[in-house]
Image (cartoon, rainbow, N blue to C red):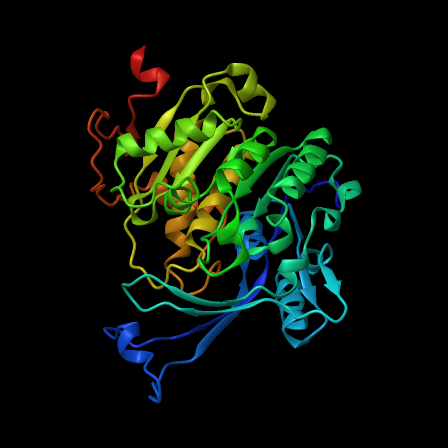
Length: 382
């Protein structure tokens, strides 16, 4: 591994096929048995956490290494070729599994509406903790793993493989980070005891970065409207399981952050003392949305980049949501992400934010940077 590698992104990778859909048409009108629906040209790109978060970090200018698994088929060769076109080194850590099918997704993303995914997990289902090249992680500052709910071996044992993997990575001195994915109710992931899995795994995770929707399903709290009070309760529950930082993706409402109040836990995660005892919400930046594929993964990339660069939590959240906003200005997952300098320039130029419509009773109003501060923030009581 290159001595300059700051971040390794491991886990799920696939090929995304994103047809251009006509404006104003609903998916229910287009997907009708026996009907031929005309669509536009397809954007073909790599997808999944390894590709989306990893390539976004690369575009931001961070030295990054990817660890994913593909089959020895045409889709796998396409995935490796697309990675190598960005940078030859990006395909170097990938595993090619003989006789296995590669993963792909057909992404139906109508303008102005949420996406629908038709997904084949392929070789991701055979990825295990033994596929991580631990010897190559020496000196890496941060290790991020994404999407275990759609990687069968990474959740089939109730979290044992995940906990083992993160334990070994932590022993090598890297900050650890974990992202989740939506659970298919008809898949093996729907049978997992997710609260028990999280309780087993999160003591070894420094940064836990799921979406609020994923957490409400996993914790059995799906249904209540999302409010500031609900976010605080979910985050407190998760922090009690062991991570130093919980960041919950809120879709078009932005990014929520809650951190441990224990300065020793913050230091063990490799974070500055300013991260202790914080509760913040960063609204989304105003953009013209071309597609929402990869928005959460790119937001995570922005946050990881900020962490590696030693930013305080407020600027880190601002940078993360700005990267996510850049992502949705393009139909695919990462081509809209510019360099870090260009992201910072847009922020400095007074890039407006979208309004937050969540009930944030008890929260402070927006500060000069557009952030909201929650009642659990220790700085609000000083």
